[in-house]
Length: 448
Length: 61
Image 1: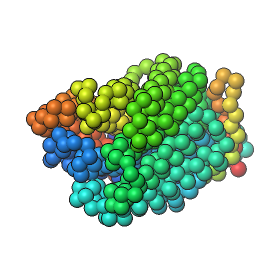
Image 2 (image 1 turned 30 degrees about the vertical axis):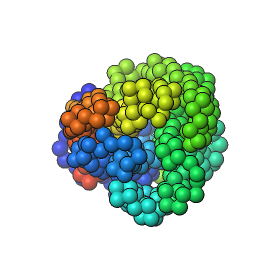
Image 3 (image 1 turned 180 degrees about the horizontal axis):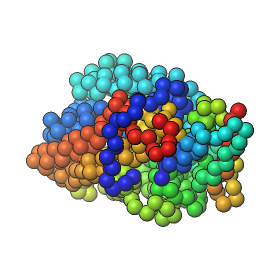
Image 4 (image 1 turned 60 degrees about the vertical axis):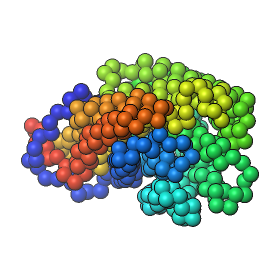
């Protein structure tokens, strides 16, 4: 992506041709998820900016759980699912098994998540069950679609495995979440609810997001930077270690078995280290030397997830009942979500959304007349400002949540909301091409 | 820079005389090209090369 967005010439020819375009059709479903995710980013940051005190509360309180689900299910999962719908066919060299099932997923997710967040806020477990079931049905469609797409592709490399595994883990996470909620209602599992909540959270963050990044990262980084994967062994080792660790971590967290938790967390951290090494080696082969803000954010986010893994290990070593070690669980969550997932997902959006919009808005015109470059749809200044301010919010949010400091939380939430304002403004500007595509002057001698 | 290869190949296809073949070498599999080229009435064959690049031939069909 260029450092500054060149201006797009003003309209002089007609809007894109009305002829059917495979390119334009490809972008619809992923773009719908990206748009929904963007709306949730704005809503989640506004919710925190209006109520920064939420992060001074203990983790097992309704406002904290509502806020976390607004961010994780509303923003992170929505965008990640959209990215999978875009990436899986490209990475696997096939078409999505069923776009129709993808749309079922979209509408169930769009209807279910707001209801879930509201139900958590009101702590209405019956309502949560209804909306949670809608979300779970959507995720069943997603997992089934992803598995069928992987199967039909015939590919079995780390990227294919990560897509299939991540789809399985998100399904398990949602079903486990519904079980935890049902247990609050009927109390049929004799376990500490806090321990079950920790298991559910780690299942989702490591199982879905980290697994996806550990595999799909090896597709995305070469695409974004014109690099090659010089050696697939670190990618494979990273996936195997973190999957093995996760298989131990979740049950150990659920039954509060500390030695098992520490051992499993070590395996997960080792898996992250292998994947990080592999991605760094891949990045070093890039032919596009300039690092644009989206890629930088993605790498900073991966580093943040690594730091969160170390912090998680420290928490596991400390006594969880006293939350010793100078950090509490909410700060740990802030580190993983705001320091890790947010830059990763936002960075991916910076790269994927302009391309999807370009395909949809200009696909029918490509080759038949002038089109703007996909990267030029984005405004580099707004992008940098947005990502920078969101990144700057991490420290005050960590300090505020660690010390229950309302002024620090207010400052952090304000920085985050301001960053989101610029970030979302840029992406809305990009998306405006869907409704008002730029007309371009025909090249000399070119076809109109 | 992507999608520049895609743009250049599709530009070439639009001006390709009947009966002629367009051959393109890209540094990776041009996944987004295949569906669009088929929609525009072209057949393709694509093969990975020993150096990791891809050679794709397209003919009007």
